[in-house]
Amino acid sequence: MKRTIIAITACILLMNIGGNVSAEEIGWKRKISIGYNQANGNTEKSQLALAGSIKKVMDSSEFFSGVDVFYSESEGKMDSQKWSSTTRYSYDFGEEKRWFNSFQLLVEHDFFADVDYRILPSTGIGYWWAREDDWTLSTEAGLGYNITNYKSAQPDDESVTAYGRIFAKKQILENAFLSEDFYVYPSLEGDGTSLKSTTEFTNPVSKNMDLSVKFTVDYDTDPSAGKKNTDTLLITGLNYTF
Image 1: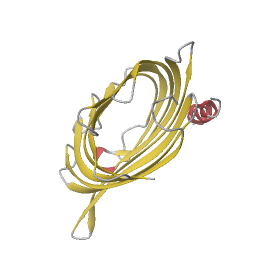
Image 2 (image 1 turned 45 degrees about the horizontal axis):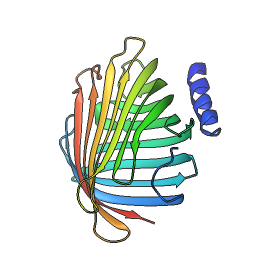
Image 3 (image 1 turned 45 degrees about the vertical axis):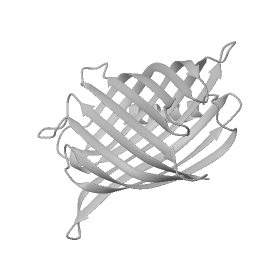
């Protein structure tokens, strides 16, 4: 328990000391998303998808906080429930501002994957290979602390983990973009490896609204007993930015 408190506190403190410059307009952005998705893996249900986020782009830093919720019922009874929250802060440094530090806190709950909650604070360093209006590419690596509490009798986990990330975003039509956000989390204490991939296509339908098609993959080499190691979501929805 003491290690858990130290890990969470350290991440929160790090977040307050210092995002990345992008081609985006400096200032606050808020986004609300609503959609519908088809899940495969530990649940095979179509679900309501809701999401909200806030982001502030500063001169050489960026703050982001968002939450995604997936839920469905059959005959008045819940048969799928999953949510995740990400808070991230990063700032650029170096002569050309190509390098950046990142500090992130991930919190997850997945009822049918046996995860009551997972808390993963992490910090790392990354490099911008490209950062233009029509093409963005960055890589980063770092360390985190994975705290997982299971719904079943499976023993809870606390372990140090490394992570690697690749983020790419490309303009493919006049105003449409295709992006990929890929994470790998290899445990440094022999607790397996998890992968997270989010591929998204966005196309504006008005000044403040985008059509979004998103495909996510969660893979765990060491899932709970009786659970599948791969979960996928195909999400179609609308994003409203203001």
